[in-house]
Image (cartoon, rainbow, N blue to C red; front, side, top):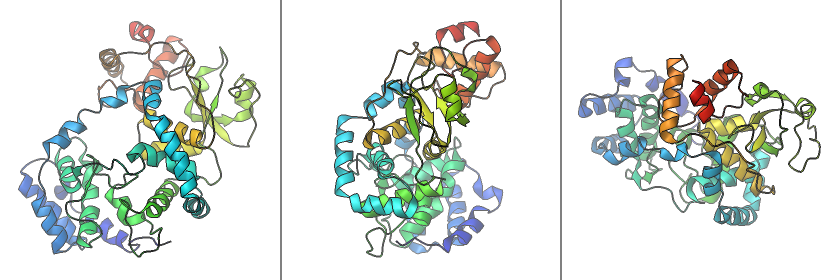
Length: 392
């Protein structure tokens, strides 16, 4: 195993703590690029990387994609039903077998189970088949110059320029519209600082080398807090009535407590106490599918803050580990896009922070829904319904 550039952190830290003026977004693009170039030069980027930056341009298609993430307005059942496909299950199982030795190394060295890595590999690029065709540097400068979320993308530019300058990536490297690269879609700073040379050829290639991809993904998950030999999610059956206000990802309780309230395994048998604590997540309310979520599920949220994506990835990993398909049960009908926007506007008017009013049921909106359900005496399950909208 070989980690990349362990001494670069100090240089990047110094560059990223540059004066605030150099961190501003918007304004004249050429002047803005000069500030980025100064930051890159201070971090040790040479002529090759700086020339690549000089040629970088705004990509309107990237801005369009950033503003049109309607996929996350789908319900969990809709999204997971589409993403946990027969193709991904079949090829995931085949890859776990084909690269069994590499997955075994990943678990031994980083504590991350093979199905977890394989699930991300499947969802991000269909095992490397669809890595994206956006010019990565153009994508990052576009999103960093744009003032919507510059704090997310600006810190990725110098690491990418460093990779280009050192010859690890070509100047015209392509990937996802948001700047991710490779078969599990790593951001440049992760590629630069935490990548692993899994095949021992003296370089890291996250676009073509499967051992590099598997071990680097495992290391990334470990760095985000993955706990060795522990589960991530587990499907359960919930009773018709219980203290719903105790549910939620962050409300972790001993399994004995959930069992006391009537939560069982999917087949109705008692929960097996594993000595861990877990939250009870209800992605579509108390009448929909239900899962115990352990500390390792928090790492999924760190990977992608979309709750729907994170839970889908976690459930796909359980399927690859041998679990059956989950029971969708019969959730109450949710809200359409415009109804969800109306709900978010009402929540904002009541003082809740839901982020952007975009019709997406994100973490902040779920939490605001729970608080209003509690105030109104409705079962507190975080699932917005037409009843809640009418009551507000």
